Length: 386
Image (tube, rainbow, N blue to C red; front, side, top):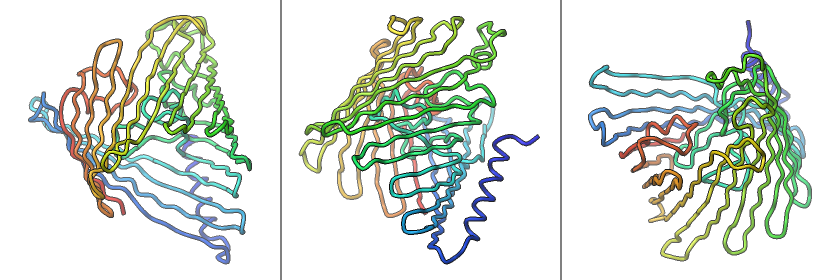
């Protein structure tokens, strides 16, 4: 039986072939590039058991001009990755995967675009602790900024006053994404939209998303055998302004409409700032404060966590950059520390990352990379772009 993903993949490949073989009188650009990265992570608790990893993301893209005002684009890339870890008791442990990373086609004009396929969808004003991390899992600690995409159709229209509207429909994304801990019901459609408008010397936006969740797959400890799906609605408001210092806020409210769930309401709020001091080559500071609460009532109290984050970035020279990120868990009184020295050449990037964290992560619990950064250690990553 063909899955929706396999049928969609064939459709996109056929569309790409049609695009390539279309009338050559129109302007057409073909591009093949890629990212290759190798890394090694050593934890002070297990110095004799380093972890080695490899990422390769080849990307093929086509841009075809239909006229002076309209264009077609196609993008296709894979995520090829593997890890090797020698262990004293179990020998050498290996894992690897080859999967689609992006595959989308886009029709666009100067003020409109429609993009169909496996793509990255992200938005919002926050950068370190993002309540609006709904469809991506971009980790600010990750030099590669790798994140899985979602299958869907995204349409955007840009008004002359810099306002813009987004409308999307998603299908076939049964795994959790963003902050989700409850998976989407199989063969169900997700719908949403976003309206962003200038306000003073900044902008504000309203965002909405609806989906059906499957509590039986995600919460095996609960007896919900009589519930096949639960509707979930998300609402968000965010804004950002530049008043000499950059200021922003981001808030999201999520409701899962079931009395059988222990915490059907989730609230998340971030406020943040950034400023570049005229010290040396320029010291940039970014700070955010984040509160997340799960409760039985929309405005009620419940189980909550509070984090502060501070990012500092300083260019040492034209080749070298030093950055660090600190997170503080106010509930558990834990500090998370990341320090990254980066040297950049034309095609090569070298990162040396030091980390000092609790053994058990409370932040970004939905990211598998947390196991790599637990405790104290160092990671060396080399990136080649071609």
